[in-house]
Length: 170
Length: 108
Image 1 (cartoon, chains in turn blue, yellow):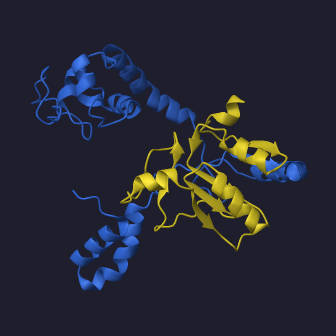
Image 2: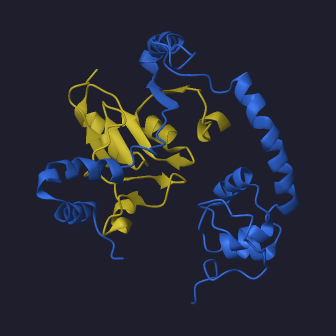
Image 3: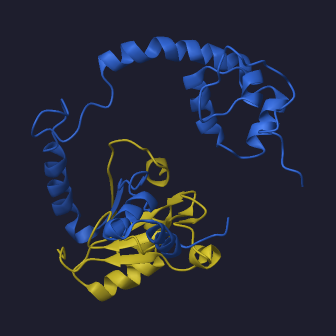
C-alpha cells in the first residue's frame, strides 16, 4: 500500500462516502487517525524558574491536594483508585497461574522467538502480556495469531511455523 | 537524578529549579524520552526560542495536550521513532525542530 498522507486518506475516504455524510467524514477521520486515544503524554517533570519556585510549589501542592480519589462514578471525584482490594483478589489467581505458564515457555523456544520477534509483529512486552492473557504455550506461539485466542479444539501444535508466520522471503 | 531522568508512569510530579535559559534547556533535555514538552511564559519570544531547543516531538506553548490533526505527532529518543500520521518525509520531521503548537488565550 502506498504511504498516503493524512489528507490524502481523508480525501480518499470522503470520496467513497455518500454525499450526505461528507461533512462528518472530516471529523470522523480526525478521530480515527489522530493519536488522541493512545496519547501517552503525561506531564511529570516541571522545570520551574528559581524565582517563582516556592510560590509555584505551594500552588502546585494545593492543586494536587484538591484531587479527589474515590469511586469514579461519584460526582466530584477526579479519578478512581489505581488498585483496589477487589481487583487484587479477582486478578491474582489467573495471573499467578499464567505466570507459571510463562515460566515454562518464557520464549525459550528458539523457533518461537525467531518466528515472532524477528518479524517484529509485537514488541516483547506486548507479547508477554498477550501470553499472560491467553496462557499460550510455545508451540501455540509459533502457529497462533496474537490478535485472537487460539482455538484449542481443532488446533494441532506443531514445531514448523504455519505459512501465516513464516518469515518473509528476502 | 534517576527520578528526573527516567519515567515513573505514576502519580508523581517532579519540580526542578532552573536559573537561566541554558540551564532549563539542559535540564529539560536530560531525559530518556522526548514525546512532548510545554512552555509557559508571558514572554512569547522567549517561549518560541526555548521551545525550539527542546528535544521533544511536540512543544506546546501556554497550553497542554492540544492535538491538532494537521500537525504530525511523534517523539524523540525513546518516545518513538516516527511521526503519526505517517508523513511522506518522516526523516525530515524527525531531525527537524519540534512541532510547535501555541495558544494565546491561556497566557499566564
